[in-house]
Length: 156
Image (cartoon, rainbow, N blue to C red):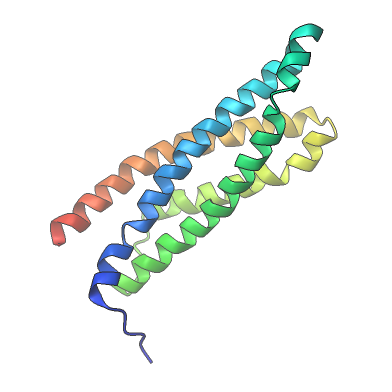
C-alpha cells in the first residue's frame, strides 16, 4: 500500500531540511562562541573568572549543544525521509554520507560530556576536535546542499 501525499506537500517538504540545517549551522557557530568563552573562563585570572562565571556560558553551551544534537538527528532523518518519499530512493553520495558522519560525530561529542564534567582533559580535547570537524563538515554540507536545492528548483 502506497501512501498518497499531495503533490504540493511533496514539493514544499523538500525545503524543510535545508532551512532547519541553516538554522542549526548558525546555532553551531554560536555554540563554538560559547565554548570559546568557557575556555576563556577556565583560563582567566581569579577576578575576571568571577565575572565570566556569572554569564553562564557553560549552561548555555550545554543547552545549545543539546538542541543541536536533537535537531541534527531529526533533520538528518527528515531529509532522508523526504528524499525517499519524493524519489523512491536515497541518493547515496557525498552529501548523504557526510551528513550521516556528522550525526555520528555530534552524538559522540555529546557522549563525552560526562567525562568532561569529571575533568577528563582527553575527553575535552576530543570534544573540541570533533566539534571543529563537525563545523567544517557542516559548512561544506551547506554548500553541497544549496547545489541540491538548485537542482530541485530547476526541475520545478
